[in-house]
Length: 255
Ligand SMILES: Nc1ncnc2c1ncn2[C@@H]1O[C@H](COP(=O)(O)OP(=O)(O)OP(=O)(O)O)[C@@H](O)[C@H]1O
Ligand SMILES: [Mg+2]
Image 1: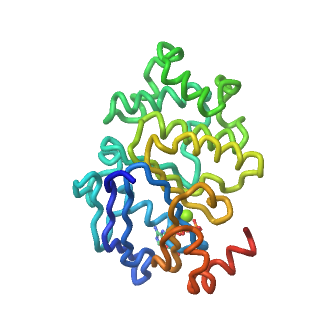
Image 2: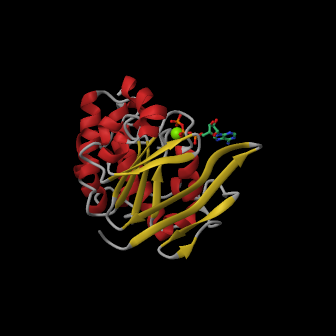
């Protein structure tokens, strides 16, 4: 395992008197693949928001590559190499696949540009850029290159979102429910592209069904009501009495 790359200490987020994330400690090493599971409302997305800069914690801190980024903007964290995908899609749905990839590449090359400037960019000259071609091939989207995103299947769109995140070549890629709503075949295809990223960057994947993560993640973190109730190898976590009581019983029914 490589050196530690990300460290969250005692992260806490309250909405009024409700504690959505409750003193969560988390560390990630270079190249590691970690899964975060837990029932609806466990605090998984809020935890992602804290780590990636969409929320500021009420307590605790986030260190990335040894640097305190607790109050750094999402954009700054992306520049440092901490990139996420969203539970709800974040593509430009009225544009073709290839333009979405070019915009992702362009935003990496010209960080700080606003969306209007990106959209006004002459994209034609990037159509043959090898990085865009590579992304189309690697994410099995070559046949969909010119299709407008809103006409893609959900599985294709998910692969596009991951491709866009990968174009910024992050050190850490965090994915919030990349498998949600997909058919078995689409799940297989998304897992394939995620597997192709192992060894290139650290991955953190939120997922409801533990079964999808077995054989993929090296470590699991189980959240329930804002807290981490178990952490370790998937096998250890699934044996844990509190996990079995509070999550697995629920998870097993839908797994
Ligand atoms: N902006 C907000 N304002 C108030 N409450 C919020 C806000 N964001 C999240 N919450 C609450 O915090 C709790 C944790 O939400 P969160 O979205 O982090 O859960 P989750 O584990 O991602 O759930 P899911 O599996 O459904 O995506 C929930 O009870 C949610 O209603
Ligand atoms: Mg969520």
